[in-house]
Length: 262
Image (cartoon, rainbow, N blue to C red; front, side, top):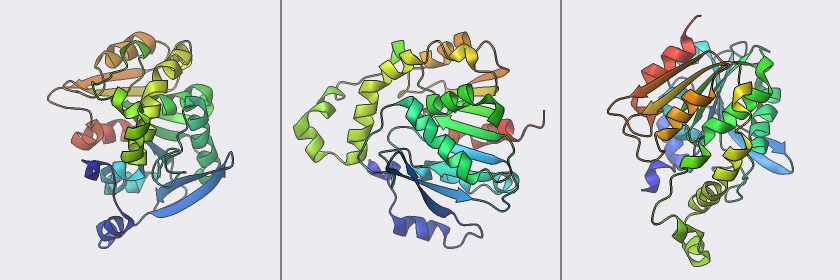
């Protein structure tokens, strides 16, 4: 199961051994914590594209897009280990959407050498974090893409085993990334309630992608986005025969939005 979420340094080195363009790994200090991310760039004058993963996850959840030659030709790409995951203070959750969005701001300050407007892609729990940044710093954002977003506080999806993950004895057994994901899940509803009055302040060009067969995020989140995103130019795409991992199953749709000229 964890192979879906975890790669070792050795596996990543093997993956990139034959590739012409390899990532650079960087760390920044952020509120007395360590923020880790990977960047791939042919040219630092290209617009910055930032990827924000869900829960659980890591920067390499976007390997297929980071490796894409067309995106490499058009963007300087940065993929973040959100706080508590990967090498960003692994196991120490950060539950505030606002603070996690400010992590993006810290990276933009360090990496946006072109000073052009940036592109943001957030998936699942990463979607509202990317949106928070776009809402509060619209002058810095060209486009926002929310893939399989979990943004509706009334439709946070829980499973029969979700409560078990809160037990102390269970947390001693489970990998730390799953404990972080559990903590995020049980705080997420309240965090999304805090954002309810903010969606009308989203003005940047946005796209929402959802798999029609998503079994992880309630597809009511798609309807919520349609109701709430009323002041920005926005496209909505519910993709048939597709689950939660839209960016892996349909990278061509992601690229079409990111590379569209107008």
